[in-house]
Structures are given as structure tokens and as C-alpha cells.
Amino acid sequence: MLIWIFVLCVIIITTSVLWKKRWLLYHAWKIPGPFSVPLVGSAFLLSATKDNFFDLLCGKLDSWRPVTKFWVGSQLYIATTRPTDVEKILTNCLNKSPFYDNFNDIMKDTLLTAKVSIWKEHRKMINPSFNLKILNSYHDIFVNYSKEMVKFLDDKEGVEQTDFLRVIWEKTLDAALATLTNVKPHLVKERQRTITLTVKFEEILIQRFHTFWLLIDFFWKLSSLHKEHKMVCQTAHEIAESVIAEEYKSYESEDRNDDTIESKRFLPNLTNLNRTKQITREEILEETSFMMMAASETAAITINTVLTILGIYSDIQERVYEELVSVVPNIENSPTQEEINRLDYLERVVKETLRLITTIPFILRYADEDIECDPYVFPAGSNLLVPLVLLHRDSEVWPDPENFDPDRFLHDEVGKRHRCSYIPFSFGARNCIGLKFGMMLVKVMVATVLRNFKVRTVGMNSWKDIQWDYMVMLKTKNSRLRFEKRKF
Ligand code: HEM
Image (tube, rainbow, N blue to C red; front, side):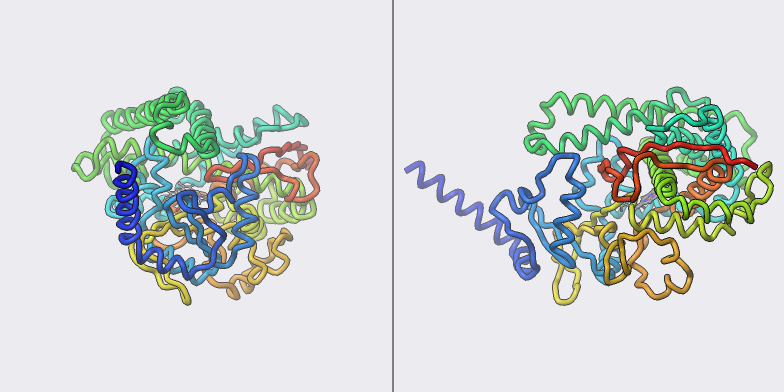
């Protein structure tokens, strides 16, 4: 008897779940996709170690392109590499996928993760701090931290750099603090630990994703990894709190003038808005913690990848150097903002690097409503995966896509492509707020290093020899760089 009651309950629950999801299932059914089994979906096709997950995911999505659906448990994922679909998704779906909830312990209601209602308010408050006038005032600060990198390399000339990313990251973190806040970086105790903690946070998440029982919340919360994760998040917040405390101190000690450019920077601006109760201190803490990481890590990774690529393709590096010498003839002079803007070839090199090796290779949105992408409907309730890295390597858009060729970004070539065929900073209202900041910082740092040094990548002949560490961002794993001082 009991067994029959149990079977009946299972049938009732399954039918009611299927009934609730009938539209999702109906539209999903029409979209092509790999084999999937009840409860697990197609997740077993994506099971891999952390070392080969990125290649496996790219390989599978590539073989299922241009549009595919797959199930991970009860969650429907739809991936597309058609630029027209991508434009619709990034314009209409501003909410992030529930996948981003994994970051909630360290950054809950931040620009990256917040639900659209909170995001809209925060973005409106933060946008003015990224206008061109304010960004232009950062140029000299970026130059100063670039010179520190040159000084570091002068002291270590000829020494093989096996973790140059860390060296760059320390400089980009200081540059972010010196520009986005009014705090002098050296006053922030243990700021270098932020980097160690960020790396640890990412490692813990990777370990969680690759241990299937840790994906179940109940087991995750009982695990020692979760305890470690909590400790990392707490310490990261303490460091961000110390930045905010310094900001408040400088706020109180100086004669206030709210019309200066300095008062419009990211943190001073939020501190002002806190006085008028438009944002809480808790929200400022979350946003600051995330912004420092977003600004410093993405830029550092991009600079490291550009240098690694130029170390491999020495002919391209020589062209960058020739351009640098013609635009900034006197090595004693730091490049001015106007000179940096004239480095067209360097800009094309950075863009081509971000095409082939997209720092953030995937983004995920959530469909709150049905999105029509002829002949399919991406139904409300699905997770929409935009594989930027595959979009950027689509042979129908990019002839010989695996060839590193900066001239793809010559003005006339750009005009021939769909505007969503190249979007390393995402697209639409929820794109990267730091696009211009990031491009400026990357160009200034790379230009300053290459004006002084020739870089060589040890043991690699092609970008395909680079191995990758993937967790949200794509970092080089095996890059060994050697710097030789240029003779003048
Ligand atoms: C230099 C290389 C950079 C790249 C390739 C990059 C790329 C991206 C991408 C693809 C997104 C969308 C992420 C998603 O939707 O999941 C994003 C978002 C974001 N980025 Fe960047 N970024 C860079 C630098 C920066 C810098 C320097 C800052 C800060 C100064 C920054 C701040 C942000 C913020 C706050 C968001 C969330 C925006 C929102 O949802 O409103 N990024 N970035």
C-alpha cells in the first residue's frame, strides 16, 4: 500500500513540475541540442577536470553551434554564436543567470551580480565616475605605476619571470586604489593580500565546481572548503572596509569641495551619496570590494596576455616598438595622453589579443521573458550563454580565425562586421563600466614596458602553446617571460 502512495506522490509532483514548465519544455524541445537524461541533463557530457574544462566546454559548444540547448539538472541553458541573437539577448535580458549567486558570499548586490532593480540604481550612481573627463585625469597615475613596473624589471633584468601576472596585478591594484578612491594605496594595510585572497576564492570555487557532491548546497555547507571560503570572504571584506575607513578619514580631514574631479571618483562619490542616504554603507562595501577586483584583475590579466603574445610574435612586437619610437621619440619623456591615443597599432594588438584570448570568455544572462530568435524562441526561465570566445573565432566572420592578425581592426575592416561579432567588454546597457578605464590602463602599461624592454616568451612558438587557467577569467598558466633592456 505504502509503495503505491509513494508512486502516486512521485507522479503528482513530476506532473505538476512538468506542467509549470510546459512552455519552457515546449520551446526547448524545438532547439537542437545534445543527448540528455532525466535529472542530470547533459551535465555528464561536460564533466572534466579543472585543467581541461575550458577546452572541453569550447569544443562541445563549437560542435553544437550556432544555437544549442543543454540541460544541467533542471536548469535549461541555451548558447548561441549568432551575433543577431547575441544583440537581442544582451539588449533585452539584463538579469544575470542564477549561476552568479555563487559569488554572493563575497559580492552580493554589486553591479556584476545584482538583480536588475538594484543594478539600475547603482549603475546610475556609479556611471558618472567613469566619464571621459574623469578618466583623462588618471593618465599620470597610470604612467607612474607603469614606471614602477619598469623599475622592477630594471632590478630583475635577465631573470625569467614565471609569475609576472602577480607583479602586474600589484601595480594595477595600486593604480585602481589611486584613481577610484582618494586613499593613498600605501595606507591600506595588507592590500597585497587582496590578490592572494582573490586567487584563493577562485581556486575554492573551481574545486567546488569539479566535485559534484559539493554542488549540492547541503554538503557544501558542511564541507571544510566552505569554512575556508567563508574565511576568505570575511578577510576580503575586512580589507575593503579598511579602504572605506581611510576614505571617510580623508573625507572628514579635508575642506570639502564637492565640485572637484577628485570628489566625483568612484568611492568619494559613493561616500557622498551615503551622506544623503541614497546608498548604504553595506552596499558601498560590496561595490568597493568588487570594483577593486574587477578593475585590477581584468586589466592585469589582459596586460599579461598581451605581453605573452608579443613575446611569441616578435615581428609584431617590433612593429609596436617602431610605432612607439616614432610617437614617443624621447625615452626620458613619459607618453602623454595624446601620444597614447596615437598608438593605433598597439590598440589593434590589444584588440586582437582580446579577440583570440578573451579575458572573460563566457557571459550568462537570464531570460525573464521569451526572446524570439528566428526560428527559435528562447523561453522565459532559461539561462542564456554567450560564448564570447567562440563568437570571436567564428570562421564565417573572421577569415583564418586562429591567425593572430591585428589588422583585422583597421577601420574599414571593423565596418564590415556585425556590431556584436566582437564584444570583449560585453554589449548594451549592462556592458563593462570599465571599458575605457581598462583600455587606457592596458595601453599605458604595455607601451611603457615595451618602450624600455624587449619581451620574449620562453618555450612557445604559437599562442596555442599557452595553457589556461579558467575560472570566470582566462589566465595564462605556463607563461615564462624574459625582459631585455632596449639599447638607446
Ligand atoms: C581590461 C579588461 C576588461 C575586460 C576584458 C572586461 C570585461 C568585462 C565583461 C565581459 C563584463 C560583463 C560580465 C558579465 O556580464 O558577466 C564586465 C563587467 C564589468 N566590468 Fe569589466 N572588463 C575589463 C576591465 C574592467 C575595469 C578596468 C573595470 C573597473 C574599473 C571593470 C568593471 C566592470 C564592472 C563594474 C562590470 C559589471 C558591469 C555591470 O553589470 O553593470 N572592468 N567587464
